[in-house]
Image 1 (cartoon, one colour):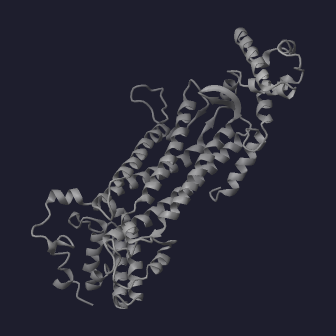
Image 2 (spheres, helix red, strand yellow; image 1 turned 120 degrees about the vertical axis):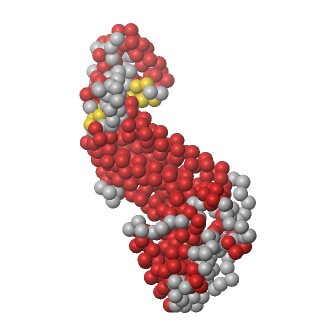
Image 3 (tube, one colour; image 1 turned 30 degrees about the horizontal axis):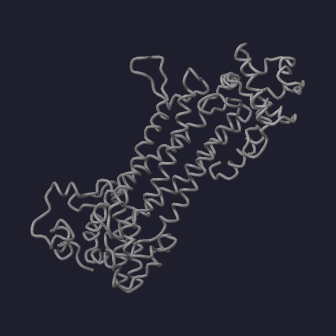
Length: 474
């Protein structure tokens, strides 16, 4: 092996700022270095860059492209580099532009010519595409696990409140009684779809671009399937041009992330409304709230408010990435360097938000009395009276009209349908009998919806238990 301290081992990186500098007659300006460098944000992919490089080196050695001694030296050097990165001892250089060249330079410093041979049969184009996929695959796995934990937290709270009655709304007007547990499980359904979308997205992320080289493949006898198996990919990208230029998988993840945050935002909006003293359905634990600099009585739901706001930035990253890709000809273009910051921030925002919500949901303090009182407003059992009349043989439209007259009368009197006597109700239709008051209770209303997807307490318990049984986080 060459002496790593000799000029021959370091002339490419130590004496020249860039791997291609021999082609140019003047150095890159400091402004251009800052403008084009990505190392400040792509260094987070260092672990995955090393992982991909080790798999590439193993394949090159197996194919006889590099020697076993070179492979061993590369592995030894990469082990040292990972240790330096983990201990925050690695020196990152803006002159070397990105995570890939920084690691390669350090590898050459450590192991000499073996480090230079590592880049045989690949380009930064397929290297970065591989690193991003490895990194994103890991982020998807984390997000799916967090979504499962959040669904479990919602299911456990739903079990506690399978019988807690609250008003269900349409148009923010009282519509029909539901249980708080049923309401929570609606969000569990949304997050279930989110996990399914991420799992489906992962299939397209988990394809190996390495081996496409710059754009046309390589003349070396590489074994791409071997590298794919080593790295845990399901297969390889089938076209070298597409392999280096495709960012569909990143767009797809950002779209899934935007939907996750949209669902978080809807839940956040309800938490903010429910916590308002004008509603008073819930309270959040103090550690998720802040006070006011001037009003000592305030307790502000900052976490759900900020989550609602962060949804906008994730949505923006999706649009930015779509716009980034829409005008690019094949194959790789420098534009694609702009794919990372929005992608990274989307993944970070989803991860942080889900982590906080997993912690916040179990600490929600529910106020059943306020919920019940609100459900008694707005004639929430009017549909139950209409259904009762239909069961007596009336066409639904006729029953609907009869109940509308009854509601109008109650509005004049300032009372609820359940407050009307049997005789008063029979004045609207003679088929009404004494059992009507069981129908007009809140408990009777929710219990009557005893089918799959219904709000009956028995169904809520059944559904919550199903979610918990399916969740590894339970």
